[in-house]
Image (tube, rainbow, N blue to C red; front, top):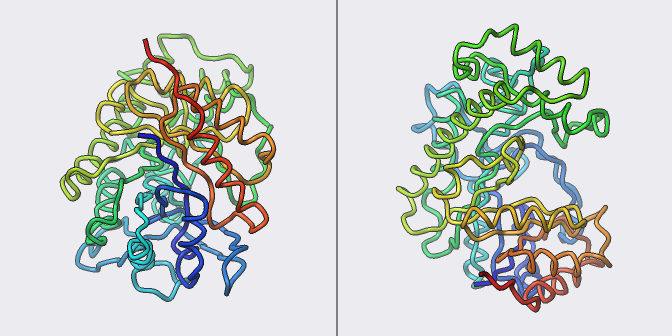
Length: 381
């Protein structure tokens, strides 16, 4: 079934009685609402009482229960920039009362606050530089934290309100990080970024099959400095280690979610490129079979995004095309973009972002939803 949803934060819904009407007027099937999220500074151009939210640290937008987190080194914080004791739960209840289904959006291993508190649990590159925003899936403590976080983000949500669960950063993040007034864009080629995104922490080294640390890090540095990729046997070993850790994290989270919410579909933020590192980690051979749908990043409005959808569809799960309606995307080109994605095999469309979009662009959501639905799906042989 073709579905169109749009993303939002709890603060977009709370205190805005017109929010549900905007969802309905855009012809959306659901809202994908953040229930745990990394630090951000967000515009709220259509909210009646605010224009900016400074979410200074990664937060759990559900009650942070002391009896669950006591004694744990890795524990979330509640957002002190919101007054509600259960921001996401309250927002979902409001949407449910308006008859709007919700996908619960859970961000897992992207947490700069925890990464700074426990740097030894973060991704480290071949130069010994830590990425504090990136918790490494090779660490059991990280995996246990992510599974517990997912359960606490989803527990006791309004009955019948959830259409699905959307898991972001269920794997390793890499050198690219879109935040903190980023000043790395364009400095490194795709090959260099791939090498800088290989984690060399103790947990990942344990999966290198006895390869020497100095040998591996030296090869990775050479790849960065010469813009030449690794020899295949070494690359395969490093990728296998990353995928093994990613599988352990995702599997632990998905099992916990399915035990809590049997029958609720789970969508995985993912990328067909196995080396992709970030909010949408590269798919492992086992990943697609363990979830119900794959959400793939289709923000560039080039034909490359359509090829990404085709590649993801080969994994045999419904593909959800993730599209931004915000700049630098050209509004005039977006309807044709979503038609291409639908023709390439996308069964769902996820639009970014209901709360960030200014009023003058609100009609664009309805136009994109209609364009996606009206485009015939490709014929499968």
